[in-house]
Amino acid sequence: MASYWIRPYPPGTGRWLVIAWEAVALGFLTWASIRQFDLIGHGVKAITVVLGLVWVIGAWRILQHGVYVSSHGLLIRGLVRSRRMHWHDIAGVHLHQSIHKLGRWELQKDMTVVIERHDGATVNTELWAQGVDFHARPKLFRAVYQEIRGRHQTATGV
Image 1: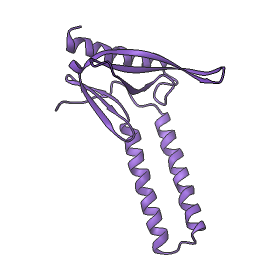
Image 2: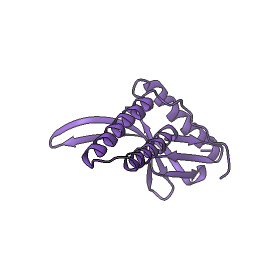
Image 3: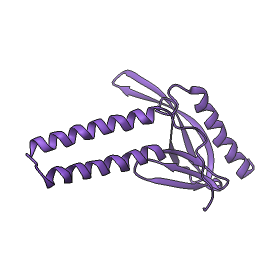
Image 4: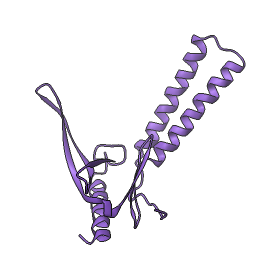
């Protein structure tokens, strides 16, 4: 599936907050590790380089994280892996409202976009109404959902 992938929404500012938070956390981990193990010289350089690389790779994945579309299908990029699906393999694109329960209390109702495949399996996307990209932009969440659904309908003639 060689085609041009686009993310139908701009990333939210929350991503930059997550990346900054991770930089501070890894900086603290580096400092604590150096102090805990009494590292000097090459040990300090090694742990700094290793944790710096972890941060760079993690930041890059956070920036690439999301749902991409093309004329051929859908690409879901997560933090660890990516998944591609052709439009003809997708039976439908739906909104799903999940409720988290703790005993008899309902904690939160979340809207997510779920992909239903023709074999009956469902695939969770990275699109979450309360996530870093859409928390302050609920209209954009609905617009992205409609965009993906419209592309699916156009590609499959449904």
